[in-house]
Image (cartoon, rainbow, N blue to C red; front, side, top):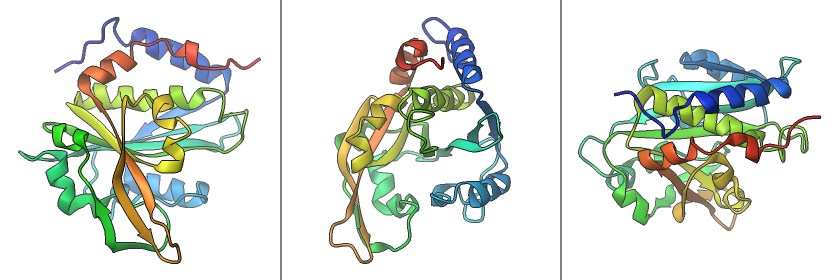
Amino acid sequence: MTIQFPRDAAPFIATSRDILRQYGIEITIGSNFEDYSQIIKSERKVQNLGAPFDYEQYDLNKNDAFWLIGRNEKGDLIHTQAAKKVHLNTKTLAEHLLTKFRDFPPPIPGVDLDRSRFRATPGAHRISGSVVYHGEVWMAPEEGIYRGTGLSTVMARSGLLEVMRRWDPDFVYGFMLRQVAFKGFAERMGYMHNEPGALMWQIAGRDQPLEAFLTYLSQEDARFMLDIPVEELVIRAA
């Protein structure tokens, strides 16, 4: 099936390329997760590789997964994200995550998987069919250069467009830590649903657990979001 957007994806692609070129950013998309792991290990030292994209644990191939990175004019890594198909079979996401939520821990040390928990949100009960997990989202911390300019919107939706072009899933979902969600990052990424209390991660040495929201889009949501002109959301470079 070929996805058909209300005005086709060509305007989004053309505008996004113009914006990224103006900022001197080049995007690369790949499916070799051994290569991606090495990029993360050597160039994204502030955030470990997320467990869902560990090629030693999962069979990540070009039919089921991809990664996307952005580099600036100097060749420095300034953005990452990745996505993979999740095979629910006949289950809902709520049913699937009751036993599989530990496959999606935050990329930090000391996570106590035994004491952590998943709570099915309303959306998790609705998500079924063909489903894609979207994660590994990271943007270089230089405020005013990459963050705070709207570039995260362009980058995130470039990944979303790639998801839809490859697989046209019924739903795309991810998890977002509470403190990040409260900054409005889900909305900037284009996620139209953001449900609190989905995951509570117990961390060694911390009294309070880390809360993660369930963020997701339906196929219809994705088509709507990708039809919004991205140039309205980005501060253009001088």
